[in-house]
Picture 1 (cartoon, rainbow, N blue to C red):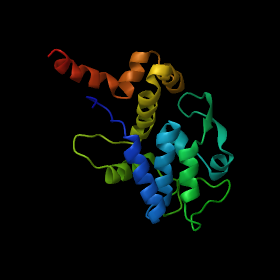
Picture 2 (cartoon, one colour):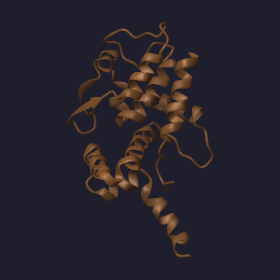
Picture 3 (cartoon, rainbow, N blue to C red):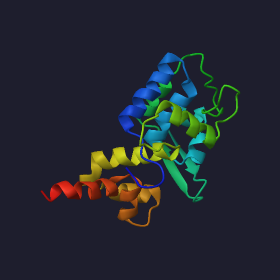
Picture 4 (cartoon, helix red, strand yellow):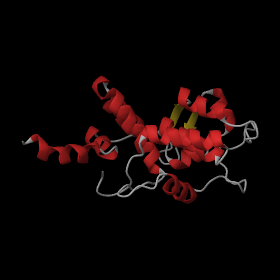
Length: 184
């Protein structure tokens, strides 16, 4: 766990909750948002701007809100599975924004934070919309750290050093915590 900021969202837990929300018809659009959040590694502003046409195409170019840099985004098989699982009653109009509330407006980052806390309420875990991006990074690092995964993430997240990326995905604090046990 990190000392400040938000923690990463566990990928497997997030995908289970996303599919639960989609398949139950409970909060379909939010389920899709979670699936996209932990599989695309986007900041919340960029994530909320996605429309169904982009997801249906499978890959698309965005201009990142924060950095103003162009970035290609790919909807992987997990995102496609979540999209296909959405009920026919879901508003999947081409060109329409994906992540709209029951009121028909695009979720605000603050509302996303409230819903994430509602669905992932755990003691000692600080969840925010950024937790999905960190969860994406953590999942990728855990799977591919021996195959250049850290460098990939550093480039994708536009971090200045590998140390910044490790701290961002919560690996630095874990290593520091484990130092005590490694002494014995």
